Length: 310
Image 1: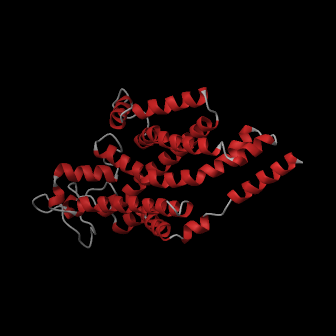
Image 2: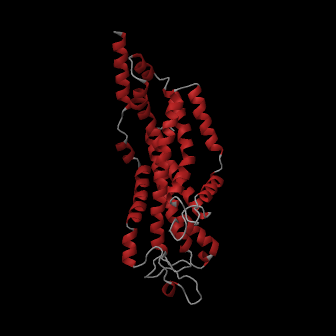
Image 3: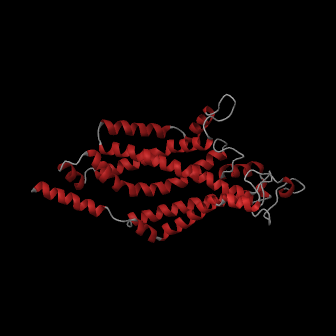
C-alpha cells in the first residue's frame, strides 16, 4: 500500500511539473519584443539574395566606377547604394544582410551543440556523485583553463594545408571553436541544477518504485533542467555571435571576401573609411546590436516566466 501511495505521489508531482510555458512566454512583453527583433534579423538574412538580385549587387562584387568617388573614397548612401559602399566599391547593405547569414549560421549551431554536449555532461556529473562527478568536473575545469583567442589562433594555424588553403571550412571551424568553449558553461549550470533535483522527493519516489536511473534522468530530471538551460541558450547565443565577430575582427574567423559583421567592422577600423562613410561601420554594428538585443530580450522574457520572483 505504501508503495502504491509513493507511486501516486510521484506521478502527481511529475504531472504538476509538466506545465505549458510556451503560451506564457509568448505573452511576456520582453520575449515578444525579442522574437520580433530576431525575426527581423532572420528575415533579413533569408532575403539577402533577393536584395542582391533587386540591386544587382552581389556581396563580393566591386563597383569601383560607380561606388567610389574620383579621389577613391567610397560614396555614402544613395539611390543605388542604400547604405553606401566600402573601400572596394561593394554594397554595404547587401554585405550586411549576407553577414547576418554568417552570424546566425555560426551562432545557432555553435550554441546548440554546446547546449547538447554541456547538458549531457552536467546530467551525468550531477546525478552520479563521487568519482564520476569529480572526473567530469575536472574535465570541465581543464577546458575552461584554455584561453579562447590563443586556442582559436592555434587551431586556425593547424587548419592550413600544404598549399596554404584551409583543410576544414572556416565557418565550420569557428562553430567548433566556439562550442568547444561554450559547452563548459552549460555543463556547470546543468550539474548544479541536477545536484539540487536529485534530492527532491519525486526522485526518491521514482527510485523506490524501481524506475531505472536512465529513465529517471531522461524522463524526469531533464524536463526540469531544460527550461533553465533554454534561458541560458538564449543568453549565450548573442555571446557566441559576438565571439564569431571577435574572431573575424582579429582575422582568425570567417575570412574575406566572405561578408561577416566582424570582418566588415575590422575592415572599417583598419582603413578608417568610416570617418568618410560612417555606414561602412554603422551597418554591421547596428545589425549586431539588434541581434544581441533581441536574443537578450528573449532570454529575459523566458527568465521572467520561469522565475517571476527573480
